[in-house]
Image 1: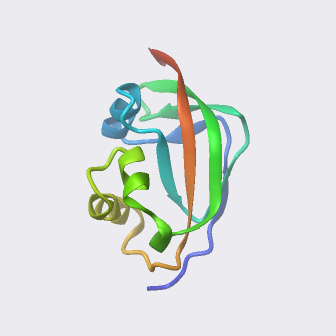
Image 2 (image 1 turned 180 degrees about the horizontal axis):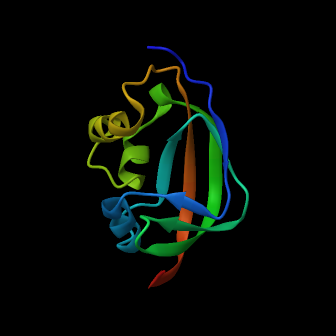
Image 3 (image 1 turned 90 degrees about the horizontal axis):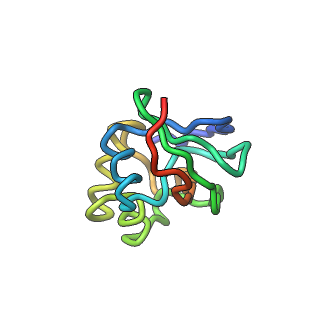
Length: 117
């Protein structure tokens, strides 16, 4: 598996699936894992599934991690039942990843429980 060098900055909105957005609303998802070295331009952003959105405060960005470093605790914070389930979910978006693949974990706290947009 090739290592993908991806650098990206989210500005204003971070996309999620409808299911993941619901987990955020329920307080069961407090982070999102992204491929590459990711930044977020603002301290507060929208999480959106393109039909609705919620406002969150970014509490921490860990953009010096690798796929192989993810833990069961990371998986639970991502709303997954296990590390294996999280790897399967991530593979849907990014394909199978090498343990050395750079990833970013973006941690957040729900600011506004009201749906918008």
